[in-house]
Image (tube, rainbow, N blue to C red; front, side):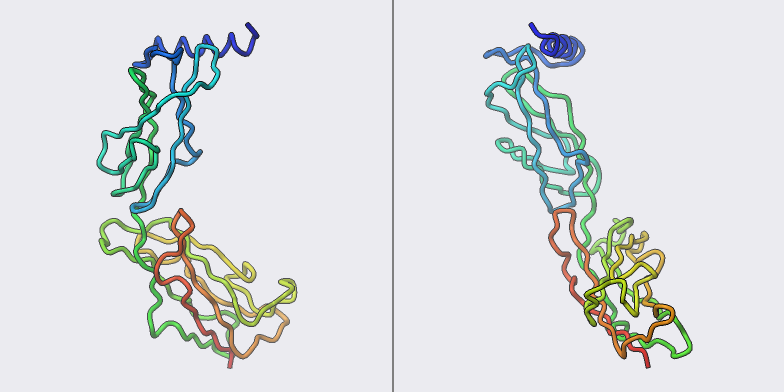
Length: 235
């Protein structure tokens, strides 16, 4: 037996001795869940967990693995390990094969933002000729249930017009960060700190600038309301 397999066998033996994992038919002695580094999902979105069965040498073997959860914050497809977020909180998921059960993996469920709002009166912003920075570009991630909050969610602001093919030649910038900026929200769903558009020192700002605002779910899907634009004018 190689040193690697000997170490794996000792590790698996220790796991079997110290947990509720027991040997099953087919030489399987342990189940290993291979979850993402950040096992987090939004309510209404999905996350796939994977598992493998190991023999006493630490090698993968074929197995009919199923899944279960004791918690109501999420659901899991018994056959595929596809986790669906149900409500904000944390839930546990476990893999099963015969008499073997894995350790629980904890999945964090975030309250999903329902919509990205831009107040109708706030979509047009006029910069005072004597000012170098615009008033705040007001947007908000809103929840149908405000009590769940929307803290530390991302809102992306991007200058879409005029098109600066070379960012170094830009004449305006978002919050001093360039042509785009990703900001986090406070408990009310508002960007914190507020986002502004500013003139680049020594440059002449265009007559108007379009700034697009977007927010994404953790799955990458756009949150409803994404794609709205601010018109910022420089008289």
